[in-house]
Image 1 (cartoon, rainbow, N blue to C red):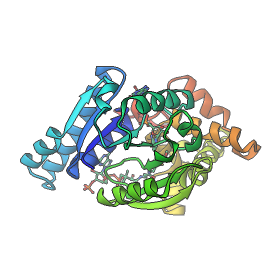
Image 2 (tube, rainbow, N blue to C red):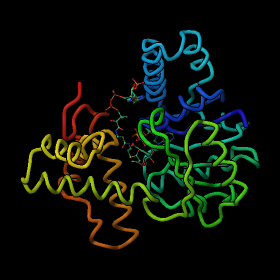
Image 3 (cartoon, protein in one colour):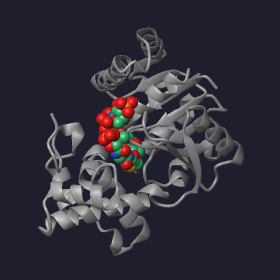
Amino acid sequence: MQKIFVVGAGTMGSGIAQVFAENGFDVIIRDVDIKFVERGLGVIENNLKKSVEKGKITEEEKNKVLGRIKGTVDINEAKDVDFVIEAAIENMEIKKQIFKELDNVCKEGTILATNTSSLSITEIASSTARPEKVIGMHFFNPVPVMKLVEVIKGMKTSSETFNTVKELAQKLGKTPVEVNEAPGFVVNRILIPMINEAIGVLADGVASASDIDEAMKLGANHPIGPLALSDLIGNDVVLAIMDTLYSEFNDSKYRPHPLLRKMVRAGLLGRKTGKGFFEYK
Ligand SMILES: CC(=O)CC(=O)SCCNC(=O)CCNC(=O)[C@H](O)C(C)(C)COP(=O)(O)OP(=O)(O)OC[C@H]1O[C@@H](n2cnc3c(N)ncnc32)[C@H](O)[C@@H]1OP(=O)(O)O
Ligand SMILES: NC(=O)C1=CN([C@@H]2O[C@H](COP(=O)(O)OP(=O)(O)OC[C@H]3O[C@@H](n4cnc5c(N)ncnc54)[C@H](O)[C@@H]3O)[C@@H](O)[C@H]2O)C=CC1
């Protein structure tokens, strides 16, 4: 397996492309508009520049990694790749459309993985004629730093596909865990309702945003507070995950907090828009 196709050049797609390229794979990264592709490539270049400044890699290594990544807006460039990982927006209809197109374009043996953070792998797979080759490969943000990959089996995912993706995660220096499909998988089913609760604590006026985060950092030893984490993930992504948990389980304990929805409607998405619960330069 050598040629990788990444769909989506946002927060996750760019990180995933970087990690594959750092580990010697040839990567094509695709988004719907060239300006999104260029933004993603810019983020990767910036990350690598910082690694050079810190003395972690040489200028030559940086250029080698960048040389392995090519941007495109054309999905047909997936025709001879060995593996696809999709990291477009968290929307079932869009993901099904993408998988349908990939199924038509890609070689018979190509595995189609999704980085979805909560959606049904089985439903995404149903839009293809190769459900046994469709799987969840869930990276964590920021991808170059976080060690975990959840490898999620849909109802029809074959054990061969599962084993290949588990080994692939290990080749990237990540630690895979095996997950049977369920809304939010393991981490997000636990983590995202906690963030939603922190938003409730803020809305109730119990404490300020910075005090809520300080409390969870010092009182629960979290590396960053839940509101800063929501800004890092993207408040739109957090809302999409809560919406999935709520509608799939049909349980009011997963109700997205109205303040979260209001913030997303206002475009206060967090780091990627410069403002969320906190401001970013
Ligand atoms: C929503 C989903 O579906 C699933 C998810 O992803 S949920 C989100 C999961 N992620 C988390 O929980 C992250 C929680 N936060 C953290 O662990 C830390 O804040 C952090 C690792 C992100 C940053 O650490 P920090 O100590 O606060 O900041 P900082 O000192 O700047 O960074 C630590 C290292 O990470 C690197 N780093 C930080 N952000 C980075 C990024 N976006 N890309 C690449 N590297 C990054 C830094 O360069 C630094 O590297 P060195 O140690 O080699 O110098
Ligand atoms: N943000 C996070 O912390 C995490 C997100 N995820 C998941 O990863 C996926 C991507 O999330 P982010 O990178 O945060 O989103 P993002 O909003 O930063 O980026 C999404 C990108 O997908 C592009 N896109 C939309 N439709 C497309 C299409 N048809 N073809 C190609 N590109 C398309 C958008 O233009 C955008 O650049 C989502 O499914 C999300 O749930 C998973 C783990 C962590």
